[in-house]
Length: 567
Image 1 (cartoon, rainbow, N blue to C red):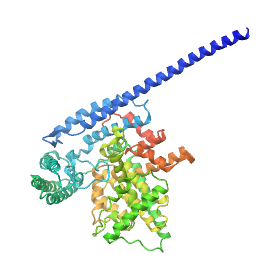
Image 2: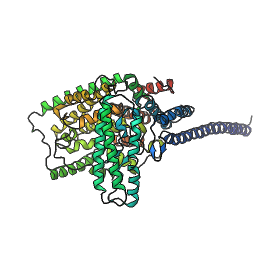
Image 3: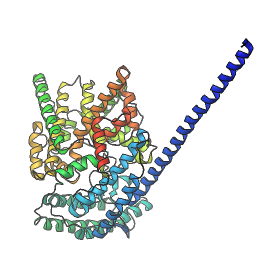
Image 4: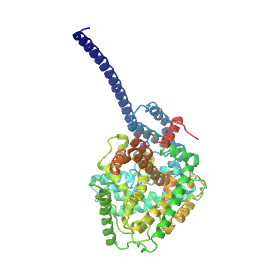
């Protein structure tokens, strides 16, 4: 073969090989494109199902009044399996991780309604469910615990009211009397604690409505009269609940098996009731041990005295906000936003001269400590100003499914900031960080034992008060019983502070292990925020790209019991 012929043969071989190779690459690329298009179509179907689901899970309205009657709730429950079947028909296993997480979030919400229909039944068991008037904003993306459709969030109204807003508020207020009348038939439960403490909540609603009546006394139209009718209806209903409570003898907890199901299938927490008892006791012991060592170290230092002057409180709070935000920025701990300062300053309030509630024992000694837990208000500002583009993550998840992210992260952030150096110049303030951990662990043990029906709400309050250092969680104050009542209404809320904190610490550990010297806290937190207010267990998965073993075990159990309805 001469040289020219040899080059020609080689050229044909190269060209042919290139065509074959190009065809192979194009084939693979085409396959990938078709797979991506199919995946996008299926995720689009998930988003459409999510929109339908959010409409379905609301109760029907009759003349604007939400219907929680036996017939309405039974009708809803009979239709739930069709939504679960449609979700199960969308197989997410080939989807990218964030899309798989979206699928699990929707299933958790469906499981939440399933649990409410089977077990919790707040419309039938909890008189406080019918409290619908809330003067101030919750620090959570959705109000804690079960709340009926159409609840009035008075903080969303600007006073003095425009004619349009007065009319809107009046329409909402007029719903209160017929809803409370309906509740007399709906409520059939026998849980003594829920009935006893529900009456107290109704008395608070009456007082709040009385304050509103004064506030709108000069507003044109029927608003003031309708507020007074709503208050009278609330008082009548509270008296009825109190009379009924005297004959109630049942337990109010959901039981250990149901609690386990709720943790795993609704809250997406990879622990059992028994795991959480161990974890909460461990945190209580750790907090008390650390506190004892710090008190030994600081024994010769002056004891911190609470602020008692309103002007001094305002000065100290403002300085604390500036100091805290400067610390976060200079230490590279958060991607900063201009709205952080106004979000925190809005929480200042006024000094309460009366007996101090638990958190003011801390706040009035060092306002900067509670600013770390006020991460909630940064989260809410971000929701308002930088909404997540994903519809499933754009607003709050139902059934407080967000609480390991919101409450857990805020709790963990307190100790993390201390360890980052925020309190290095204030050793006695460091002691209070462990008092906070101890209080969260103590009340979480109450949550667990109330739902196991081992103790009553009053016994839970007594135990939490006794286990919290320095007698700051006083039995003659409001906080201790209000917290325990919420945790009885909303299983796993009381434990979410510590269980979420532990999972956030696991997330940071996994990120450090993956990134090594490339670990950068500001960048990790940027990705953490981008994931949205979803369970910390799923944020761990999204950030690492790999299923943590405990989260995988939890989700694998879901696969085995996807449509189960335990008795």
